[in-house]
Each structure stands twice: as structure tokens, then as C-alpha cells.
Image (spheres, rainbow, N blue to C red):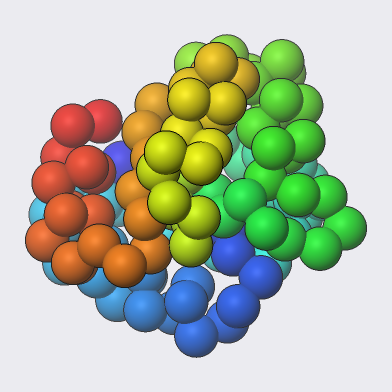
Length: 117
């Protein structure tokens, strides 16, 4: 599985990559720090899964999700956000997100979400 991790905080990206790299099905992990970089990376490569933060500079997660899924409706997007699920999950599902996980979740919860893809 080829995964792109998008978050504007380097420490969060590095931590996610460390957790994800322990999953045997994962063959590639790349990273982006804003929505524009996500779209650029999808133009130049094929990813099966995007882990996307909602609050990012240049292009936020909501707009990134809309644009990306219009271009590539097959990609799966897991939203990983500090915002509680009740606040934005329904909106992101309506936009096409495949899953929603709060950043307070335990690493095992992230692994469970990823094994669903």
C-alpha cells in the first residue's frame, strides 16, 4: 500500500510515518506539509491512501479533499484531526473521506483504520 501523510507539523508526520512503517502491507510512505503539496505529489505519483489533516496552510484539508477526489475518486482518504469527530466527520464523509480519526487516538486505532483499506 502506498500512503501519503499530510500534516503541517513535522513531528506529527514523522510520528505517523514511524507507526505506519510497522505495517507489513505498506510499501511506500511519503509526506506533504500542506494541501498544495498533496495535490502536486498526486500529480507526480500514485498513492492508494492519503492521511489528511484538516487544518493546514496554503490549502486546507477540506479543499484538498474536494479537489483531490474530483481528480481521483478512487483514492481513499483518512482524515486525522485534532477536531472531535462530531464536529467535522459528517462533513468530511459527505465530501468523500473514507474514515475519520482524532489525533488523540491510540496508535493501535490508526493501525486498525489502515488495515481496513
